[in-house]
Length: 102
Image (cartoon, rainbow, N blue to C red; front, side, top):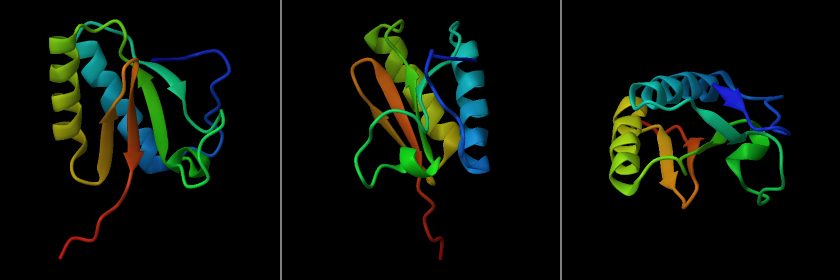
């Protein structure tokens, strides 16, 4: 795993770091090194989970569409229901959003 120049991880939450480690293993399984493109750095909306260390973005531009779909499906399965995985053109956003289980 590498950080894109300028990426800051100061304030990352343990749950988010666990998700980064899982994402790293998924990327490696699919033949790519995980590149974090944003964590607590950059300008995000007021309510972004990035601001509280509960989200990160990872590069996907080196995957073709079918490989990206497979990577995302595996990541979602590995992370479970407490994480949102949102696909963008050049990256995947992962946010920790704990849900009450009853």
